[in-house]
Image 1 (spheres, rainbow, N blue to C red):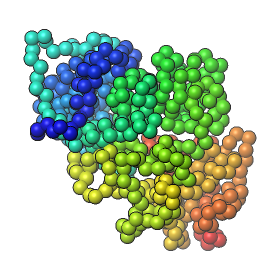
Image 2 (image 1 turned 90 degrees about the vertical axis):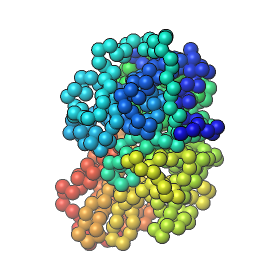
Image 3 (image 1 turned 120 degrees about the vertical axis):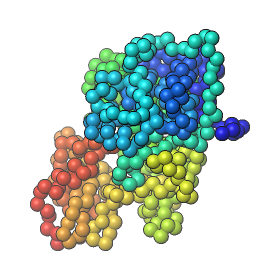
Image 4 (image 1 turned 180 degrees about the horizontal axis):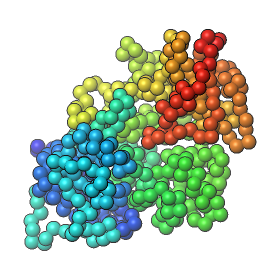
Length: 512
């Protein structure tokens, strides 16, 4: 490939940040601090080794390792070697990892989980580079491995910014595991959008990467901050005391934290042992029960309990609709990104009228390249999600098409019913599912979590819904639970569905 004047890849980003900000801190973890210059050197050395191991242009490197600096250095090394990195979930069982490796067919395997890799990773014909092997720089060594002073710098391949550089296992569209490839240009584009809309402070953010990097959420903002020259602190743990310590020590301003962790932090820091006042941006809102304490100990803006950042997928490298964009809208998920064409299509493939549900489609530079090393050659990406475009331009997400409930001849969108249930003052969490019904095909069922000190019975919950949306959308069965079951991707709807399938069905001929 010949480099063009318009290209800019992740490999370019690493080299240019090293030239522009060589001595500034880029990554901080338990091992210490790495500067932009040191990361350039480390990733360059590892890129040499990947090519020597036989990584071809466009080849795939599987990563199996912890969430620390080595993950980031590995990603940049793969980018500079002209390949794409696919991180494996280190929480998976050996059987699951075997399936992932079989599906991935890597050209090279990189590991820094020596203790787990020996027992969990199955044998592979691909070359394995073990960063925990004897002679490798350990996680506590802050000085980078360097090329010998007499060795000429190798000529790095020209990297096509349209090619994938990071890949993830995803089931967002079909419900079955597929590998989505994210190109260099998507990462650069989305990083710039996040800076323009204030999702990343382009001048003085300190970001706490406090989640698994085998998902795109943490990495999305980590790379955006790298582009803007902001330091990133990698937690590597979800321990609330360690998270509090890191926020206080590094004056963290933004963190990847969600409700369960927020609650644990508030409970731990009830006496304000740790100073969390620097923290002003998170992608979630605190649980109602601890909201006042959270806002008192941080500088995060108060938000409505129903607030969300927006709508997006792994396949779109983050949000394609954001609440941070433009003036307020009646749509809960905000307005489409300034660099995305977002449409809602009806069953005939025509654009739905405002207020009518249909499948969300996306076109723009932040899209994936395709699935399973294939190319997305359609005119737009069909998300497999149901949404509504509002008259004022906003977008609402109603849920995955596969979560759609078919009751009789009607479509019921769980998110719509859940939103109505959450308007009840006693309800703090809701999950609506469809359960097989001999007459209606599926019946609408709801699992609810109530606020402390509040009571709610089935009749009251059903009446609350019936009075606000069409009667056929109301739950025909309601269960009050202590908490909703949570899986890797959020609420586990299959587990909720089983709550109702194990009980006697309500009469199928009840009034609709």
